Amino acid sequence: MPLSQLEVIQEGLDGMHAMLDRAVPDMTADQWNARPAGDGVSAFFSLWHYVRTEDNIVNWVVHRRPTVWLDGEWDQCFGLHRTSQGTGMTKEEADAVLLNDVDAWLTYQQGVWVVTREWVSSLTEDDLPKEIVIRPTPPMSIWQALTGMLLYHGYRHVGEVEHARGLLGLGGLTI
Image (cartoon, rainbow, N blue to C red; front, side, top):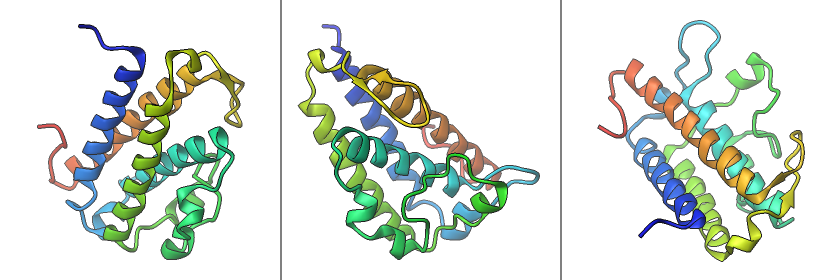
């Protein structure tokens, strides 16, 4: 039997979240913070940016409630910006985004996954065409936000994490 649109989204998010959950404890903070030669960003910057984006979209944009980041005072735990998630940062600002506690990060990350799963499981097919605004992008449907801003965007950052792992000799997440 074919999957519904919501089942496709949930299975895609579950798979991505599982890969990122496997990656986090498998790397040290120094490995997460390592930057490739040239203008690249660290694997942690890519991870932080994506998880913060998902947290912002699900909690702030959709529900108009504080993010997991702010509720848990994770900004203070990690010494990172209170509201930024990286969009528009300069290289110097991105280079300053550093992981100081791998276990704490995993706790924050998994807290975001729980809230996202609860939201997606509460949706119906009738909710998917409803419009939301995720600044700085134009208005989009919930379906477009789930596919473009969460799934496609998230898997792109999983690829960056896998590439960084390869450069460090750690191997991929799927093989």
